[in-house]
Length: 390
Image (cartoon, rainbow, N blue to C red):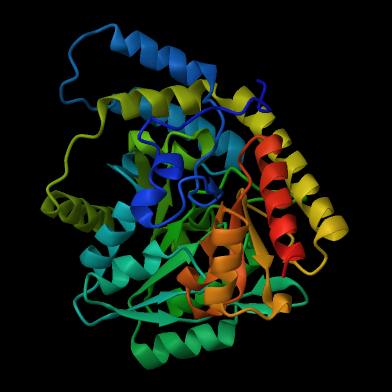
């Protein structure tokens, strides 16, 4: 695959490139915000979709449980060392949808739900829009690396009678890949106080620098029995628009409660083409993914070296996972408004401001580097030019 080719995504109703003016940004802004890739998907996916499109009826569809279950089982065993049971599966159109379903299924209005800010902002939205209380045990930045404050986490669970914990693993946006020991420690806290864990593991297939993702449910039966593992091929294989997620709930009673909530939302069969793409991706997409990961590692090196050489006033937090880089702008001494003016109006860049991930993200920016290197080079050159004038 040639990932250096810059695809023209404009005019395809692409959120990343076609929605700028509708969202208050200049038409010519260069977007490195929303988490999809500017890369063509694996040929195996395109070929599977092409074969399906030869049949002219696109009615209600369901994946064959035995066939799709075998594909899932093989993927997670070979890629993550987790031996799942396909009967644990509940499919939803997206992980954010599943998080909202978990909030509604396992808590009541007014109940407290725990998160670790700065964290993917739909976590907060799913809590607050469903009339629950958001409680954050903020991550602590120590020596350029974020950590969980376990004492603070346990104290807030007890003080607020927390019932549900939304875990981001690997963590978006700070790029941490939690170690097995960290996951076990937070899991012990949650089990001790009867807190259900909903682990968003959508970025599980992107880890760097020798880090390895640990599926939360793989910690042991006692952890698996009190959790949901939320996954999707959407980030891994760049098929977010096809709307398929795989949610694994080992505990049968919890799985039934979750299913009832999904039913209550009025959702049943998934996108027909999404099912085709998901199965093809997980069955035949690994060679493509290996090439993508190698290219992204090159992008990370390029980004880091560019900042060190040309923009030393900015600090890249060393990424352990995801293709989203977390950059510290605080040394510029700019207010949120002035920094956004610099980035949007002067540098012509569309990023995700750290502020939207919670107060703990103030002064940071999130960069999506899943793009051709030429795009990344252009973005950083525009940023350098804008900073040289300030």
